[in-house]
Length: 155
Image (cartoon, rainbow, N blue to C red; front, side, top):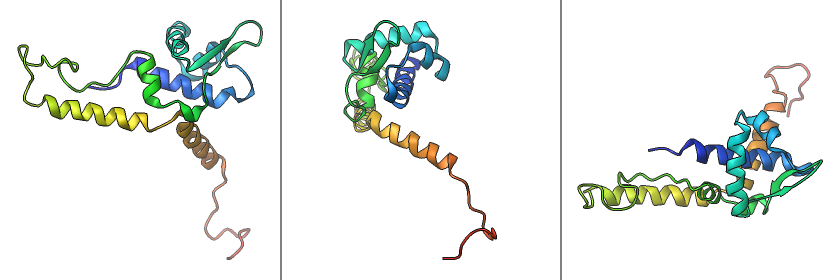
């Protein structure tokens, strides 16, 4: 089992919003262009995210979306749950009717794995991803020093 496209796109769109929303609202068209996600799909996702107060919309010229809370207050689990998605590793989807109406022998194992993944994602905030992305961008933009470069200073 894996995280659905819906959940992945929701996290990607929220990260784009967090990274690009510092100077004002971001339009869904901008996120669509940046991330290659269809505008109509983003509209569906953002309706769900808005219902959970994870984003707020501004209408009219210069309108768009901004985060409903600080990026540090929004966990990745919050985002995935807001769009009614979850990673469930049990064959029965957590209903305990895996095998002919009864629990399968490995139900508890897969249920525990689902809980571990939820806890992992609940402990990662959108702010954490923003910082990781900004750090990666700074690394990519930083010029590499060349060993033996005549312009470098010896320590």
